[in-house]
Image 1 (tube, one colour):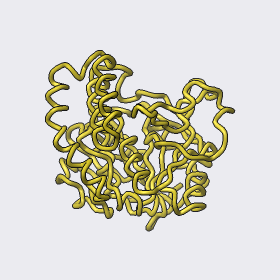
Image 2 (cartoon, rainbow, N blue to C red; image 1 turned 90 degrees about the vertical axis):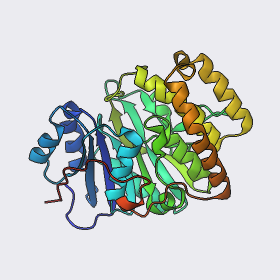
Image 3 (cartoon, one colour; image 1 turned 45 degrees about the vertical axis):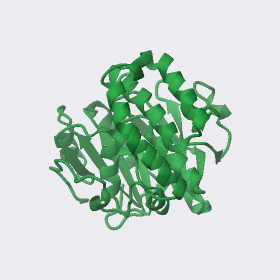
Length: 319
């Protein structure tokens, strides 16, 4: 159970019509062996009663409630900007975590101040002997892949470096985010965690996998696999991420890739229009990243977000 006061760790859980997952997720977090934390739930315009349910059953949870869906990047940024912890954790709502999940993440960060982010070992909820994600590898062509996907749990190995941390369950050092910024809100959802990790590594921060921190993940709890929404943002963001961070050959390769994958959504309207509209912003970010300039300043207050907060209607303080 979290301890009232200024916490060492802030956990941000984003929710959109996920009431069916919240009991298991929040209860498993409540029962952590490491208790010096707060939990902030950002509700993205749910219409399934999630906010009232959490208010009633989990009064120790702080809630930020949006009138409409702000997407993963912006919604999570809202939670991070409300957070007061030294370490900042993102956790999907369609998860259950082991009792030492948070303790192992904190131990990893405490052991090496050069680590900017660490990821848990994410297992399939329905088949916990199989890996869902053991970190993200970025190929030489600029394509991100889940390490160990559907491999045996025993193959996860020990703590070690990865290209990127999956925000399904990841811990970030506040100083690192203060240097490189938060999730890119133009991404809306998908690949924003890879983009953030890419920026962290470019500025010298380490990204690692912590297999002793274990999460069981349903997967696609808010959006279905290969839905139009998923295809739209995955195609758009894969290109924008490489424009911001990758080499020219990587940008070209990923443009060709998304022209023939993701059901060619990048060639369709409105995906093509939105991608073209965001390209100047991505190119400006590329220039800033190369100069070492943060594109999304962060010191832990909502005023540091690039846009004003939208429709924050509910906030329950720790009891």
